[in-house]
Length: 288
Ligand code: A3P
Image (cartoon, rainbow, N blue to C red):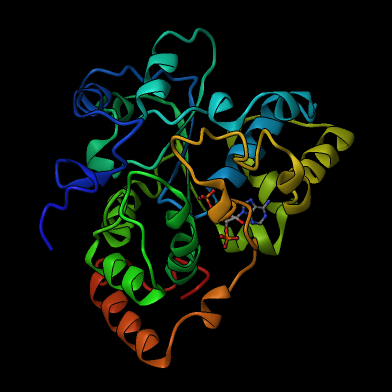
């Protein structure tokens, strides 16, 4: 494959062609000033980003659901790399929440000398592929897969929006052990949301009363998020997403890849996974 014209390319990474601009991506990396009080959600797409945004939003508002019920998630925790998100965040006073799918080398340089807190959410890459297959069909101005086989190949090549999953995780995992960097997985959230929210609020230094805490749990459930139009992406502009083709809040389960991978794909994936993840200790992730 070459530099396909159906993406916007910056430093070898494919971005959607609308909502993103080269000059802006450069300013984000080189000029954006991260502040110590910022709280950042980081992820490779389809890893549970919106789930973490919801948890952080609910903790931020101390269990009061009016914020998540009235303001879309992309305004609560804007994507720094999108042109609109960058413009909004630059001028925002007070503590900021923001989100990014950027690989570490494109992230604002100022973060690395700051005390801003960042949470990196990750997920079994097999489920990331599965979720991504359905999701990228709904997004306009990116390469849309026709078949699962096709998307599977693109994913392994890194020829998908935001580039290679393997590069993304290997890059960001260099930050592990840093005091202001927390790593959590979709599978952990799924297995024990109470303990996960507890862990996240501790990391953020926020203490919640029992009722506030219960309200967080209730509002970040799949069912509530699926029905909250401020959280389920249904208000995303038609210029960006074709809502007739699928939903952000699709299934919300662990292990759906088993209904999609062939035996051969599973073997191919295992082999490539082993090669590409050789630089990280084994057993770092729940799916290993
Ligand atoms: P599926 O497509 O497997 O259902 P991202 O936010 O990074 O784009 O990830 C989207 C995935 O997270 C989707 O996965 C979506 O259903 C899932 N998700 C979002 N909120 C969730 C929640 N509260 N509980 C479980 N899964 C959730």
